[in-house]
Length: 212
Length: 70
Length: 355
Ligand code: SF4
Ligand code: SF4
Image 1 (cartoon, chains in turn red, orange, cyan):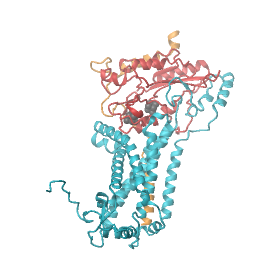
Image 2 (cartoon, helix red, strand yellow; image 1 turned 180 degrees about the horizontal axis):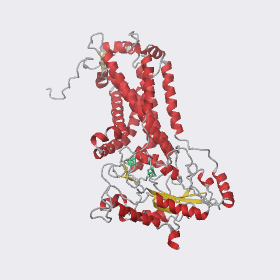
Image 3 (spheres, chains in turn purple, yellow, red; image 1 turned 90 degrees about the vertical axis):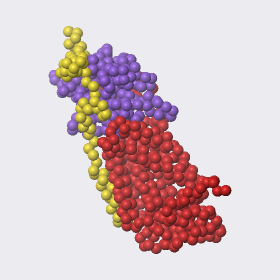
Image 4 (cartoon, helix red, strand yellow; image 1 turned 120 degrees about the vertical axis):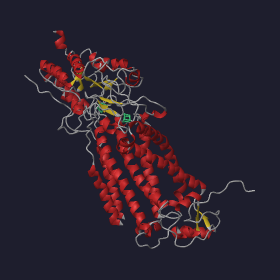
């Protein structure tokens, strides 16, 4: 069974924000809502600058799911965390709980009243009929149903951002690391996909055993 | 009365021991209120789940430029 | 009694400590500049080793991001997981069972004592106890409190208790209603709390006599009568500890959550939520007791808040010092005719139609 994941390779990301733009365009995401963003650490410091593209990581034991008061989240058979906007009440709890700051809220009234939550769907839409008008209006395009992968990763020019079945991605990444000879940091994976023995405060790095 | 109150406070604190496990064990493929639509089967783009998965796998593998360039 | 207070204080502090814990991010935090320097050296000596970059990735540093949203530059925030564990765990489990326990205690107490009736028969001479303004302030607060309590409980426990019964769609409507009521009545509740505070503060000053009342637990144990002013120490405790203190706690934390458009961070909102939960639970526990004493527990108390007047004997029995003052001031028997305390319900007064 496939387990859909994202990988962002900090050695490759050039902070072009192409993934952000692709996502906004693919799903007609409204103003103020950004399903994906690129964060640059040590900006401008030569040799220490790294960029990471981050969106919903589709966590295994998803905190957003755990705190939603109306239980509107669900997980597909492929491990994609989706939600039902018809049920969402816009309370913002998923936003408090999410480690990656993925849930977004269009402002739906005065004083910052939150509208229905919006987040990365791994280009898999929502509970409506695949690629129906209703689904497109609420969640954007359903690329997965068309046999395609998330637009952000597929158009990434440096292939820093990878999306798809975790096994395939590991193979790609392993090959990369082998060619580099060292360095197998997988950013965010321990937080999102966890390790059974890892405590909440455990290390964030999950290293792939290196050959050579 | 005093003893009763202390006893009760104790009981209330003890109630914390009934804490539920915090792990979400959502049944995969189940939606909260509606069933999620799948892209395979009768009249859909893919014959069965396997065909769909194979397509996605091939697509994921395409992200490996070492395979594509050489 | 003092020991009991100490116990409650400890409990409160423990909760606060847990809430504070939720804010801590893990691991030692090194300064971003140091780490950047380390990484620069490392990129020469050990290329591809990015450990120094990721050391602070869990919320300690904010990177550059082109999106002008608060905290968009934070890669991972740790507090969310702790908040989730505390909210779904200790806070809701203890709070929920505490409410159930309180209801059982009150039920048991009612079975034991029943409604406290007047010993003397009512004289029919009425005294004004609450002015119209006082009653309006009280009921404004009471009604908004009840709506807030019920909607809050729906949002916290509905997922476990209601969804299995009424289903997802219906519960979602209920939750949207609850959320909107909660968000819009919240500020109103704060205002009515302030009005109630101003209206009642003069009669709620703590005096030496109150400590005597507390020491004998309102004469509950000894059965001996303790005279009290317009408000007895129990009522004053509810005024200061409930209306004022908990009102402040719940009000401030509620405002932090209600208006997310001031750029407050998630850590602030997580803490505010836990404080809000704690305060609201204590508030509801107190309110259960207060409502019991004002309705089922004590004959005549509800009528006093409904009509504003009480019978002479009721005043003498429950608030002797206040009664003596009223007697001296010549106020006894001045107030309009009202129902005798303990009688069923007031007869509706026909408006007009008498010619
Ligand atoms: S990244 Fe956030 S929104 Fe996505 S599954 Fe995890 S907790 Fe939920
Ligand atoms: S904002 Fe919507 S999805 Fe998020 S926790 Fe609240 S109801 Fe659930």
